[in-house]
Image (tube, rainbow, N blue to C red):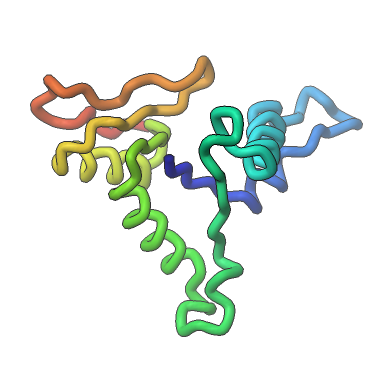
Length: 133
């Protein structure tokens, strides 16, 4: 299972605004809580270990000054070979991965929506869903 997540952004938005609760990004708050929980406990009752691999691992390499590019490349190729991919329809990165996986015959692609996960690609599709945002 591969989930591309921008932890820094999630941490910046994933804190309740105590002075103005209506301005709180509650989806980010919940996502950060869930991310931290699965890192500690794993998924599916601990049967699947979760790990993070961020730009900090590039320190001391020739890609140290290009963490976004190197990270995006690594994320892309890891996700291509993941058993399951979960993305979002408003991300061109997610859509490119889903389409690439579709043409490789990897159909376990799900889109993350406010009400949960939905199958993004089906075996009887002739082409992947179109990108829109």
